[in-house]
Length: 317
Length: 106
Image 1 (cartoon, rainbow over the protein chains, first blue to last red):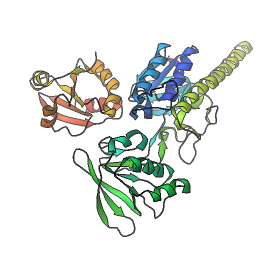
Image 2 (cartoon, rainbow over the protein chains, first blue to last red):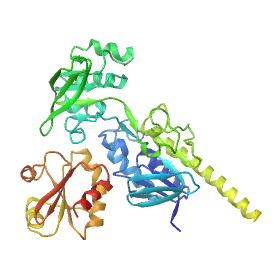
Image 3 (cartoon, rainbow over the protein chains, first blue to last red):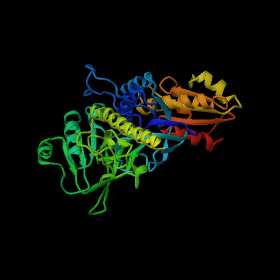
């Protein structure tokens, strides 16, 4: 018989490792499947100032490693495995990965979310070399320089406003004629003297050598192409959850987030969703961590229920 | 066993003049994605260490070497056979992707 874990956790961010910590401390046998490194999205943030307990702030990568080490201190395991396929229908859930198949009585999905990409050639390679997704994280690198913001929603407007206070000039590139952002974000942005707008425009190409040097823009109305020299671009076109693998198996909302309430229970008994991947209002490190703890509570309840049932059937026999 | 830190001199001796294949990670301390691959890369060194040399080069310390090999973006993993670069992968997103890269060139 293959080895069966009490809990298999998909994703090693704050939701995943907090679940691992609570599960391991409860005596459950638990494994975290992480494709690259602990921390998830926060591993790309150099300074985390809103996670309590670190008065000077902490680097996101280090915080991820600490969460991993803390869970492992109590016996949680980590496998650097990429998940290819899952089957949650039966009592013992199967997760097929690059490191073999893992079996679990319960599963916590903490695969997180990521910034939606533009999907243009060179985007990945230029990330961190001119292409950015987080103004609050990386804005300071562009002090006194010219940057662009792509997007027209609240977070794009917020990013543009933040950057306008740091940078020489900010160009907002939006595919429509007006911002989708609410008035409270919109008005202060319009008033900034160093903010310009490129309406009806999309990014067609990244101009670069070793680093980004500019953007080739296409006007959606006229089809005209123009080159905009910038040293950095901040892409703010929404986020997207990592749930492709679970389509058809678990209920999701229109945005692809796994439907689960504050109990973290998904549509499939024994499968829980923790952190950014779940339908929720506030997506923060601290709320992801909270989900991890809650998921373990309900997983234990589920396991206890299961055990009671199987004992009962034993008595009947 | 974790990935071996290589200097320019090591690189000449251990990579260019050896028949054994070598995998080299070009990285720098300020590169966030480089940090993200480091623990998975150490695992690769553990798993594949008997078949190939798994090393890394800090491009801030060895800028000429990075220039000569035309490393423009980091992290870049480059595979050498008989002292010659045969293939490279930029910013892999999972340990599985690094393994697929090695197997593709096996």
